[in-house]
Image (cartoon, rainbow, N blue to C red; front, side, top):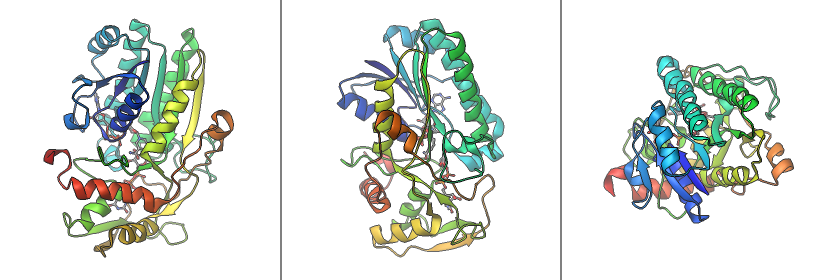
Length: 330
Ligand SMILES: NC(=O)c1ccc[n+]([C@@H]2O[C@H](COP(=O)([O-])OP(=O)(O)OC[C@H]3O[C@@H](n4cnc5c(N)ncnc54)[C@H](O)[C@@H]3O)[C@@H](O)[C@H]2O)c1
Ligand SMILES: O=c1ccn([C@@H]2O[C@H](COP(=O)(O)OP(=O)(O)O[C@H]3O[C@H](CO)[C@@H](O)[C@H](O)[C@H]3O)[C@@H](O)[C@H]2O)c(=O)[nH]1
């Protein structure tokens, strides 16, 4: 199929490009390179440097490349940043997808697999989290993505044969296990890269954001899923999509790990006893998020294969050791 990958120069999107090409699809990438890297996109893949909000340019791109399905990864994706810059999140993530859907409507493209997030649930009443829990985000990032889910539902309702899936990821971790691509953000705020950059000596220390949460060791609990498993789920969902579908799935492994447990794992994998200090809570962080991933297994037979967090961290460690300056050094 001809697949448009938005955000394909970013961390998760670049792993999607790699996998889709391995499966024989023709891929076109749309990315404004705000947080992406040209070097993350193979030379023989067309990279259109277009903003999600440029409806006319997207319509042209969809027509020119006869796109049949869109995988939408382009977004701003930092919970903490969304609290301080909410309008940027609504403009980029919500208005951005509105523009993308307008372009798809005009060009007659009727299939989309969209990156949503467990941040749309807010602070869940129960864990593990099923897809039917109430969605009440506690940060602008979560709201910016929940509005998109609503737009997809309403647009699908009025568009014959439209098919969409909104995949609510938990915390995405690791890198391609062949070492070819990885995670490179500026600024970098995600826990695993922060730990590994500290282990490499690029940061003097790292900070735990809060040890007074109502969890067994007082630090936040998250569900980490390897990026290659996450993309495998996207491909499974894309292949299963039928006209008229509107699917929602949680993508996690179903196991909650605390920040302290992650730090112990990173120290074991790297063999470096890096410096850790305790700081205040980061605004917008729910105490505990982990998935009940059984819906996608029940409906599509898909299950994450990599469940050992040491293996996830080890794949990221290989990338960071080989690319201490990210994509700039290759
Ligand atoms: N990383 C995670 O743990 C996680 C968890 C849940 C959901 N997600 C979602 O997955 C998607 C990808 O996240 P990521 O971690 O790869 O982030 P990323 O920042 O590495 O990649 C996002 C890419 O989108 C591009 N982009 C952003 N705004 C754009 C715009 N307006 N027009 C064109 N391109 C634009 C950026 O340049 C970047 O290359 C996001 O939608 C994010 O919300 C990520
Ligand atoms: O230096 C750090 C960085 C993070 N954390 C904590 O580690 C946990 C994970 O944080 P982070 O890696 O920043 O991820 P999240 O804030 O959980 O957000 C990620 O995971 C969400 C789903 O849970 C996605 O929607 C977001 O896009 C993605 O950035 C949180 O409790 C943070 O407070 C620290 O203690 N110190």
